[in-house]
Figure 1 (cartoon, rainbow, N blue to C red):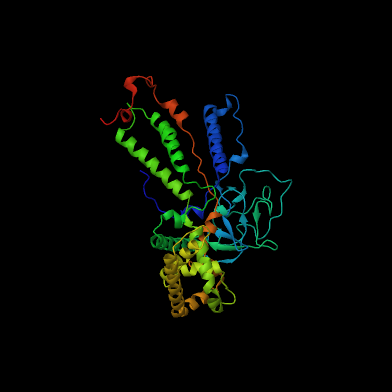
Figure 2: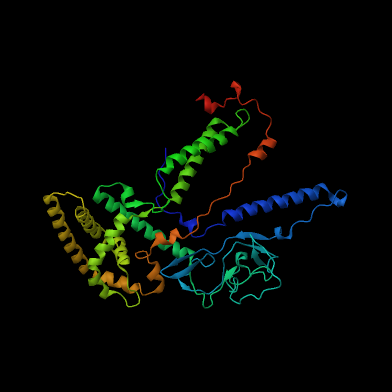
Length: 435
């Protein structure tokens, strides 16, 4: 039972990633060290016993850790995602951004940030750039506290919007809405092509990660069921533990969470089987449409293909024409032995489809011209749902792996001694079958 899960990306976590695995491990280590210091202090009050080692001052941070600002590159420009201004459209860089994981020290009203993983003090206070993070009145969140001059160095730990460093900024909510809508429109077009070609969904809509191999999933699933769930079952006491029904529910929940994580990691998009012929087909109509482009927003042939695939007035007709165009390419491929009747039929349908698509573009030219005019806006030129390359943006977001602590050792200290695991009376009910 694999289940059915959403085919799209998990935008909520992708555009606002958490701290990386290394930072999570160090954070957990700091928590344990602080707890050990607290317990040692309680055991030796008043200094009667051997003195308690002083707490490392680097552990006494007030908040954090906080990840660096997420960013991506698109057509030669760098865009930083603003979580503190989620509804901000594209603007020139106006505030500094940390490029490392940071923690906040100090008290409310006097917070400062320093590096978390490599907190090495400078030889002396380093002059901070006036455009450093938290230089704007809108930066009231401790995650954007001013840099600590004893630890932070401009250009190494944070960047500022000064020449020659220049970048753009866009709000997370605005970006997310555009990418979600573009992904939904691409999926709808893939379903059209899947039905027209009578092919499986993987032909039109699949994961494009070069490391992705669908044959890996059964092996990984076997390891998950045979090892991870085995340790989960072995850690449950059959006498004083939860009922069998609750254990089964938890096992199913873990299995579902595994499948959902797999689907989110291997997000899918339109395959080259669709995008390649679509760009070639759009190129045939490009000379007749480029005169309508705004001088400041000239579309590429791939962007024109995305418009024709996503625009509701042209998507269905473009899909039909693309189907016969792809069929003609397949028949003309070397080594194919299509019948004369079949090739003639496809050529006729292609000619009719091209004419119908050309007539449709002529009748919808007013709507398309208005769209091309709207793309003159710098933000809409890059992030309009009909134009944006959401798959490229998503591919640049960091993949964060969650750190899980193993509590089996701690549980073993508090759990009462159990019988011999090989004894017949110790066999759990879920290994004996239904009661």
